[in-house]
Amino acid sequence: MRGRVDLAYLSLWLGIGKAEIMSHPLLGILMLDTQFPRILGDVGNPRSFDFPVVYRTVPGATPEAIVLNDPRVWIDAFIEVGQSLVAEGCRGLATTCGFLTLVRDEVSQACGVPVAASSLEQVKALAQRLPKGKVPGILTISQSSLSPAHLAAGEVPEDLPIQGVDGGAFATAILGNHVTFDPATASKEMVLAAQNLCTRHPEIGALVLECTNMPPYAAEIEAATDLPVYSILTHLNQFHSTLVQQATMPYSRNARSDL
Image 1 (spheres, rainbow, N blue to C red):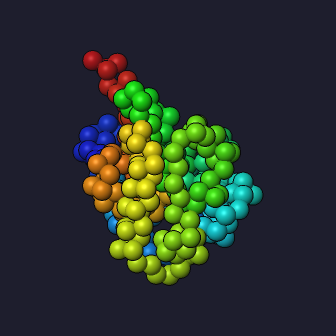
Image 2 (cartoon, rainbow, N blue to C red):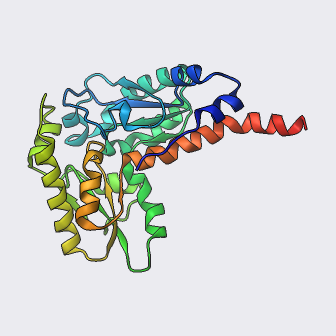
Image 3 (tube, rainbow, N blue to C red):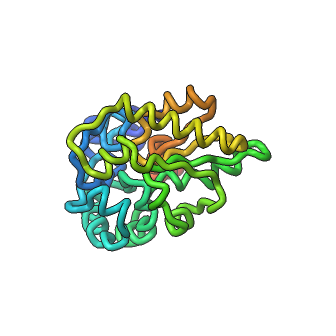
């Protein structure tokens, strides 16, 4: 699921051209220090979005350092890079790892802009929209590392169904920061994990992909489970729409006052 921003509308309200909008994205993305392929659908691939984004890497913040260890030791590094993106004109920040929900509040406060750190941040609102008796299920790259603290930071109830892909080819490649991996194998692992989770928990009414590298497989998961699938991309589409609204509101008020 991908959103679309009308750049003509945005340029009209901001009083700047489309080219200038494209060169000054509203959303800045804090990248982990990785070398694995960023295939289409991955949050680290700019073609995964229908709107412009700008990336900056946080040196040394590897997947292993963030997922398998405490990411809070990297708060200052994320703040430094985030502040540089805000100085360049970004009005909101995002990250490329769902486990960074632990540092969202600190980064947001220090940088002075809203931060979308994890797809887990969608769970609370999603749960309220599902039919009675249905709950979200979560697929994560590492169930053993997804702690109550991560869930609490994302306002996710601890009793929701969770399934990891720990130890599989996908998790090994991403957490090991390999230079290559097999997307076909990864897709099969995702689908199997989702099916197993749904079989054990028939109360699941939607799936949320915690890992930001899982969205390339969302369509296959949705087809195999017949459930809607939410990811960091669905989260950032909505987040970016809010940034656009916030960017245009002052100009809208000025326009109305001149009538």
